[in-house]
Every structure is written in C-alpha cells, then in structure tokens.
Amino acid sequence: MQPVDLAGSIDEVTTSLRPLLEQKSQSLRLEVPADLPQVRADRDRVVQIMTNLLSNAHKYTLEGGAVTVRTRARDGEVQVEVSDTGVGMTADERDKLFTKFFRAQNPATQNVSGTGLGLNIVKSLVEKQGGRIWVTSEPMKGSTFIFTIPADSTTGAAATAASAADVPTPVTKGGIRILVVDDEPDIAGLIRRYLERGGYQVLVAHDARTALEMAQRERPDLMTLDVNMPDSDGFTLLEWLKGDPATAPIPVIMLSVLEDTGRGLLMGAVDYLHKPIDESTLLSHVGSIVRSQEPQVVLVADDEQDIRSLIAGHLRRAGHQVLEAADGEQALQAARAEQPPSLVLLDIRMPRLDGLGVLRALREDEATRNLPVVMMTTSRGMSASDRSAIDQLGASVLLHKPSSAEELAELIGHGLTKGAE
Image 1: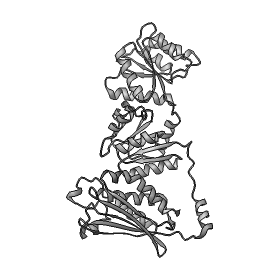
Image 2: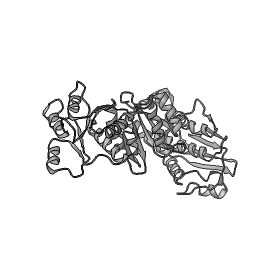
Image 3: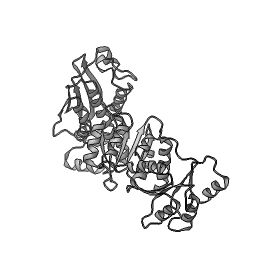
C-alpha cells in the first residue's frame, strides 16, 4: 500500500483499452478532475480493478454505445464510477453478480467469453484496500459500477514529494520495449506488470490489427503474442509480422494454453511459453532473447538441395542470416570465415568431405571448437561408431531429417537456443 496517482492509473488503462472500444464504435468519456487526490492503495491492484470493469463495460455494450469513467473525492475517499449504455441486468442478476462463477445471461451478448470470476476478484481487491463496490443497473439501460478507495492521508507539497520519493522508479534495461498482445485485459495486465517489474518498457494491444499497427509504428524490441485472439489468431498475426520487412526482425514469443506443436517456431517465432505464465519463467526467457538481439548466422550444409532450401527458407523467414553449403569442403570454408556462423546444421553424408570429417576439423580448430553443431541424416540406423564419435565431438544428433514441419521447427528452435547460450 502506498500513495497512488489514481488519475494516472485510469489514463493508463483507458489508453490501452481504447482500440477495443473503437472496434465497436464505442465512445469513451473521462470525467476526472485535475485536482483529484492520491489514494492509499496497491497500484497494480487498482489497474487490475479498472481493467476488469472497463473490459466488462466494453464487452456488454453493443456497437455504437458509450462508456464513461467519473471520479470524485468525498469524505476521505475517492469514488470511481464506470458506466455503460449496455444490456444491463435484472435485480436478480445484480444480487448474484459478485458471487463466484456467476455470469449474467443475455441473448445479445451470448458469445462473450469469461469465467464468472472477474467481478468476484474485483470485489475482493477493492475490500482488501479498504474500499466498497456496488452496482446499479436496469435491463437494456446500462450499468454503473461504483467503487471507493481511501484517499491518501498525507497532504501538502512536502508530503507529495515524500510520497513520490517512496515510489520506486523502474530501472529500464537499456530502454528495451516489449509489445504484449493478448485479448484478455487481465492477462495482458499481469504480463505487463511482470515485465515492468523486470525493468522493461511495455506496450499493450488487445487485437491483431492494432498489434500490427503498433509493431509497424513503434518497432518494439520484442513481442509476446497470444495464440487465441478474437479477430485473427496469433499465427495469422505472426505471418503478417514476418511478411513485412519492417516488422520481420522483431523477436516474437508465442503464449498459449495449448501445448506447443512447433507451428509458431516454424513460422518464425523465437520461443513458445505455456499459459498460465510464471513470472520468473517469463523474465528468464525474455532476458535470454534480449541478450541476443542480433540475428543469428546459421550455416546449413546438405548436398540435397530440397532439404537445404527448406531449412534455409524457414530460418530466413525467422529473420536469420543463412549460409548454404552443398558439400563438406564448402561447409568447412564457411565455418572458418572471418564472421563464422553461430550455429551449423550439418548433414552426415556429403560428398568431398562427410559431416563427421567436417565436425572433427571444427573441433580441432580453436576458433570453431565451441561452435554449436546439429548433425542430420536420412538414415534411421546410425552406426554405433558414428553415434559415439558425434557424442565425443560434442554435437547434437538428429537421427533422421525432418519428416514434418513440426520436427523441423523443433530442430531449429533447439539449435538456436544452444547457439544463444
């Protein structure tokens, strides 16, 4: 609990949600007095409360409707009203509204997704900060959610300065900006808080087209991308991003409640995380990617042109620079160049010098001794001597060349991760 600039928090939330309202031609009106006092609260929880209430107002208001946020100070607290011109509720629905898993039923909004937990959580968060929450509503006349938060008891310029000094200023990591794309405001807000606590600057988009426009305009250093979105799925947005030279180099982490099939990596994503997202895992993966912002240089050595072109094409679409070699001698020459690759995909059977010969030569040369190498072969029956030699020379082994796009994506992701390390 600390002094919180409520007006600033409201502005932050409304800015992030405004594109969603514009999609349904909904107007947004703010009635926040310039002299609104600070409140004594947990800032992250205030943002979570406002995000949920505004998101609900958007979801349950039809096309062309209006949403209004009003604030006023009274009797040692600040009162916030979030009003809409939406479908409204019956008296029975109002009575059950803040209970777990309850969702109002209205044919006009039957396709609105949700768990019925959001308002129950909001009520708990408001009350834990010493406030109250209630609702007024009539069917097809809209709803108004009202909550209070205790005003900060300190007054005067000195107290304001002291309050500002109490609030830690996030240390940004070199000004690195991350665009979070998720249609669920609560989840987007959670990821945002995780990243901001990690020292990053965060932008938020709640749909694919807004995200594409922001990526083109802002050129973030990294994006997190939810697979499931209302207008276009995450894979479609990823395809748009990688198809535009302006946004193709932006690293993208896919987020999903579904298990990874390799599709995201195949289409150019650099990582895939499973929801729900753990803060330490997210920051670890983001940090690893941010530390290696420069595109990887990957050498693909294979005498079969179709295989070589397939792998090279996927790598180039992911923003990496690719060197190609049709035999072992060319591979060795490319690996020993002034600017060596950061990863080698090496076929075991090649003319002039086979893959094992290339691998031995790389390990004997101090300049390439630690170069990550992935061995590939069409043969499923690799000899024990070949396997032993590859293990001793410190290469990863792919027992057979990819038979599916998913297998190829997994290989690329694994190899690039080793190269980044």
